[in-house]
Image (cartoon, rainbow over all chains, first blue to last red; front, side):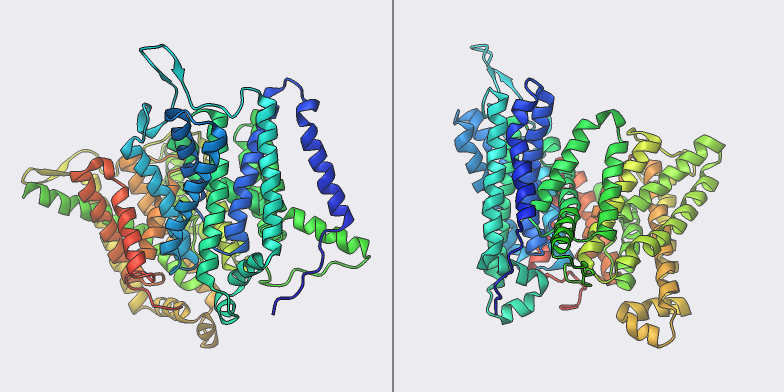
Length: 341
Length: 286
């Protein structure tokens, strides 16, 4: 029933991954004191986590989410409020943010179980829009307008009270984000190659057939929502401590969900490492090409659309495939229709 | 009494515009099986074309609007032809492609016209229709009337004409329709054009009351998407009913609990989808 997968990690791709990782580890040493660039790389790592989380739920399990900002925002707000008002260290509140987002995943998954395709995507979209509205209406634990969490000055003591950073040292923040991203990537790579990952793919490809083969689709879908929610929540929580503030516009905007999708499409849906590459590409262009103004985003979105049209596997997956075939001196096969929907 | 009459009238006006956006979205899904997340961008794009024509050529609102509607009626089928159709039967890829098209339009509008919102002049300036204490601007009343007339005409078109029957046929089975000699590709292009034009008209009116900004398309798309899913995918009567449910719920919440605007219709959507996963009028399984 479940075939043993061919080993897809060749020495070439292993070498490329190791070289990239080596470069990323050296980023603070290569760009000493360039805090803009280091910040940019921190954001790239955060978005990589978010994009991988989207990829697990949508690329692997086929449950297309338009509302990943829902999980991102829950993680961000949980961690910000706990660390600011209870004074807990971000090292504890970030995982708690992930846990809350995971429970959010359970909440969305429950109605989502009966829904498929567009109905399901709409539920994810509606949850994201709904929590955005809810936080604005409730003005959740904040002094800022419309549910924003900003620094508060305690009038009695004159102490400025902010969302604490993960560390005062930006290099440590960078290594924290990079380390978290790498751990999550390794975890996901093992996960998608396990029986659980195969069940996810089976559900994506044909839910009825998967159920007929004895896969409990409900159980696995809930699992996918919860793991994906947890990871996106972690990303949001790290983000909030990086920015030291939160507002619906910063952590719950629809743009965040769109950016996660764009990153995954750029790198290749259903590949885990593809979205990491896509997230890096997207964030580096967004941050480093600021002088080009809006043109840079226009260009990135057009590129993403062209990739969807002509390289539906995604760039990294296509390159890896061509490399493998080149090594074996074979012509690459044309992508099969509908093989990867 | 006053309040009830006000809710009834304004709810009707807003619902009829929602209906105009939603029927097009629903028809495109019916014939092409595409959930067109760039639908809202068509509404916004028409408003920008009109605004550009007014500013550049000094056209009046009416000719500028006609230009906007025609422009969208032309570009909408082209998008289908050039981008959506070659993707073939891959619903997820098509879904994401329309999402990207929408954001590309947003960026293009920002590049061409900047971030700031623009307001179109009303088609009929000043003046109110008076019902007791309720005053309705001529422009809003006109929007409601145009929307109702267009939906009525669309209904006649779909149920009474040859083309309409072809559209119905394709919605039921594309292959079956093609086998009966219906030029499916041409009819689908026609549906994209009509849907685009209807969205464009809604966008133009909305821009003349509320203005238009480069991200305004998202609200249209969310309304169309939620309405059509609430009504049941592929069911035009369902979409119309759902447009009125969402329009009235919004009007009522704005009247009695303005801060919860937006939340109420989202809540209704979630409740309906939990109770009836296929929407109000949807078939249980496609």
